[in-house]
Each structure stands twice: as C-alpha cells, then as structure tokens.
Length: 332
Image (cartoon, rainbow, N blue to C red; front, side, top):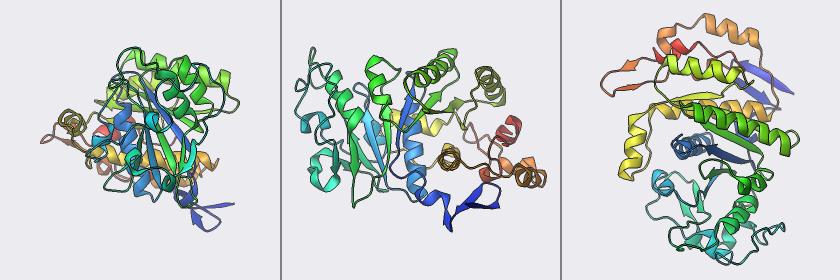
C-alpha cells in the first residue's frame, strides 16, 4: 500500500520510499568510451548517499583510472584481484561462484577498500596496467565483478558497478548477477546504438531484466529532443538528462574530487525515479498535471553565462512517471 503525498513523493506503510527501496541492489553502469559513465557513477553514488543509503562503488574497469579521486579518495585501495589470489588463479572459463565474494567489510583488510569523505565505500576489482602484458587478468576480474557483494553491519548497501567501456562477452556473465543496468548515452549515434544493443541483449539473456537509460553530456534542448525522438523509436525513454558540465570535466582533468555541480540535482532526480521503479509504483498523473500547471517554467532553470554551462531547473520532484516538463523548460 502507498499514499501519494505530493507529485513525486510516495509513502509506503508509513516509510518514505527513499529509505529502503534500493538497499541490496547491484546496479551496473555501462556506456561507450567517452560517454561519461564514470562521472554518472560518481553523481549517482553521491545522490544515493544524500538520500540516506549505504553506498558501495566497485570499479570494474580494468583499464581506466581516476574513479577513486573523483569520489574524494586520495589513494586508491589495493585491487581485489590480489585479495582473491592474483591474475592467474582461476581458469579462463570457470563457471563456479567465486569463493568468499559475499563478505562483510569487517572481514576485509583495510588495504582493499577506501572510504570517501561523505562515507561512500570504494573497491577496485583490478587494473591491467600494473600486471604487464599477458597477465590474463580479464577473466579473474570478471569473476570478481560478477560475484562480489560487500556488506556491513548486517546490511547490504546499494552497490554501483562501473564497467569497462562497451560490452563484451565477458560482461554477459556479469549481467546475470546485476539487479539493474543503467546505460549512459552521450550525444553520439554510437552511444544510441549501444543502448539499443544492450536492451536487446538483456532481453535475450535475462527474464524480467531491467535496463534504464540516462542521457549525459547533453549541451542543449535541441540535442535532448533529437536523442529522445531517436530512442523513442526503439521504445526507450531516458530516466534523466545530465547536462554538459565543465566543472565535471575539469575535476577529471585535474584528478580532483567531483564537488557539487548542476548535474548533481539531476542525479538526485534519477535516484527518485529508480526508487519509484523498484516499488512498481504508478503515481497519480492527475496530481502531477495539476501541480505542473501551477509552475512557471522560468522557475526551473536558466542559462548561466558566467559558468558557460546550462543550469538544470530546481524542483525536479514535480515531474514523474513520464510527466516531466518539455525539454525547453529544462534548458531555458
């Protein structure tokens, strides 16, 4: 049972839907190279933490670096690859579950995890760079990514898994152990096609698999509209739209933490949408429409010439379940 208090806020048996809805979920973040999937991972992790969740981030990208620093962790932890026995411990096609992968944080040596200033737990599956050529660590890393489930104080956190760019056969085995998939789509046709391919693949290998989509690095309303129309032809409706944000790019360039940016507000909106999805809740469209009619579009956001970036509107909670305002209201 649930009660709609206002458009965008739902209460379940006296508890807000943001309290427990996503606990224990493993959410994989996918995207092509350059789509900004790691930036989206950081933004979603911070949004989850702000919403009161215990949050873990698993860096599953064996080639990219910088995720720890973006979360505000000065020194990355040792790779879990070393904890579980090294690069060549497991046969290349071992179907058996990884022994000890479901473990309490208290049982894991501190060298193998980090904690951001805002309390996000960070783990690194492994990097190929320090192993040398021919190290054969792709398959063991895939085993860790597939099976690793951190927990602490008897609770399983929300775990975001930042995958390597693209999706290969090794990733298929990891997908079956994910609760949800978020595909990050930047303004390129290659990213749109990857989103289509990912949806088709999940439909083939999972029964009831859920795939969600996030537009990222969107420069203006025209770009958003074009992407939405193209994706709608494939039955895809994005959960949210993260604008091109120079502050994010600069943080990655400088190897510095991602601090509060206009994009963070949209990430918080996306988390609300995920909470609604996990509870299979249909909000009252009439209530949303009534509220939307009373809102002046100018209140949602404006172009900020001083930053050179488009600012997301405030009050994102008024548009839910496909009733979000038009693209123009977002950007202008």
